[in-house]
Every structure is written in structure tokens, then in C-alpha cells.
Amino acid sequence: MAQTPVLNTARLTLRPFRLGDASRFVALAGSLAVARMTSDIPNPLYIWQCRRWLRQARGEVRFAIEHQGQLIGGVGYFCQRTRVGELGFWLGEDYWGQGFATEASRAVVTYAFTAGNLEALTSANFIDNPSSARILTKLGFSANGQMRTRSVARGHDVDCTTWRLEREAAQIIYRLPEPAVIAAGGWTRLFARISGR
Ligand SMILES: CC(C)(COP(=O)(O)OP(=O)(O)OC[C@H]1O[C@@H](n2cnc3c(N)ncnc32)[C@H](O)[C@@H]1OP(=O)(O)O)[C@@H](O)C(=O)NCCC(=O)NCCS
Image (cartoon, protein in one colour):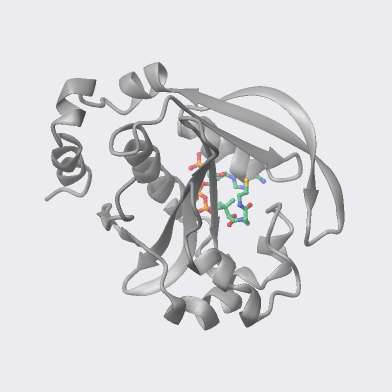
């Protein structure tokens, strides 16, 4: 997979994280309200722990979400030796309730099924996180199960709903180009359409 590119949506810029994001990352993701809805963000969160999120590991595609030139959150997916990615997203509390997570995630889902060449995306939300369930529904995911997952910030396992979006469904919902067009680089034109350029 090539280096994470910059994607533009109507209001947001999605770009690779950089080490210089560390203090802003702690200010945003260090809130318990954010961390407790994720499986892997600890609380408290210290600056030395941030490198893990700012440096992209093998199999990860992570985007920093910027609004008006400021980091406001993160979105991305993780693939483990398969073409099925696990989607995740979060925003600093000041930026909730404005449609930003849906807007950013739509661009990443589109990217995952075009440039990323995935077969499916999965996700999971803690059952006390209805806004996340709503976003996944709006993105076209279908709920397909239940499980328990650890929340590092809470220090215990929490019931989750699991979700999945197949490539065939995404093809229709996101009006993706045919695979041959994607292979020929057609996804860059798709992003030009998304960002209105
Ligand atoms: C979850 C999170 C990313 C949402 O971000 P956001 O930008 O506010 O989300 P959006 O505005 O794009 O969409 C939220 C949707 O949930 C709905 N919603 C909000 N609170 C809700 C509730 N209590 N019950 C049902 N729906 C709710 C909103 O109305 C909106 O749907 P709509 O567009 O149909 O009105 C943000 O709250 C967050 O970062 N939380 C902490 C981390 C987290 O939960 N990450 C996801 C882990 S699975």
C-alpha cells in the first residue's frame, strides 16, 4: 500500500498524522468521554503514549482529521493479512454533533474500497454509544453480531455490536467506479468529485 494520501471533503482535510500532532492529540483524545468509547485509547493518556497512534504501523491506514487547519480527530482502518479492514473514528468533544465523523468516514470508506482495494469493512461500537451506531448505519454498514471487547480506558469488557459493509454494497451506495477503472487510477477522479474540485 502506498503512503497515506491527503483526501479533501467539503469541510475537512484528511492527512497522515505527524509527530508534531502529539500535544494536540493528547488534548483531544485525552478526554475520558472520547477514550471510554474506544477499545485502545487509555485514560489518562500521556504524550509518550501517542507515538503509537501518530506512527502508522504495518496494516494500518490512519488519517488525521483537520477542520479549518486544526487537528480535530482521527479516522482509519486496520487490515490483518486479509482484504477486510476494521474501521475506527473519533473526534475531540468540541467537534461532536456537526456531522464531521460521518463526512470523514465516508471519504475513508470510499478510499478503502478503491485505492485500498478491500473486500469488506467491519466495525464495532460499544452498546452505550448510539451515535457511533448511527454513523455506521448512515455509512451503509449492517449490524451482524454482538461480542464483548475490552475498553482500556474503562478497565473492563463492554458489550459491542459488530458491523460489516461488503464491497458489492459499497459499490452501489458510494457509486464506486468499476474495478478496472479503479485499477487504472480512476479513484483520484472520484475524490475530485467528493471534494468538489
Ligand atoms: C462517535 C463520534 C465519532 C460521533 O462524531 P460526530 O461528528 O458527532 O458524528 P456525526 O455528527 O457525524 O453523526 C452522529 C449521528 O448520531 C446521532 N446521535 C447523536 N447522539 C445520539 C444518541 N444519543 N442516540 C442516537 N443517535 C444519536 C446524531 O444525530 C447523528 O445522526 P444524524 O446525522 O442522523 O442526525 C464522537 O462522538 C466521538 O468521537 N466519540 C468518542 C469516540 C467514539 O465513540 N468513537 C467511535 C468508536 S466505535
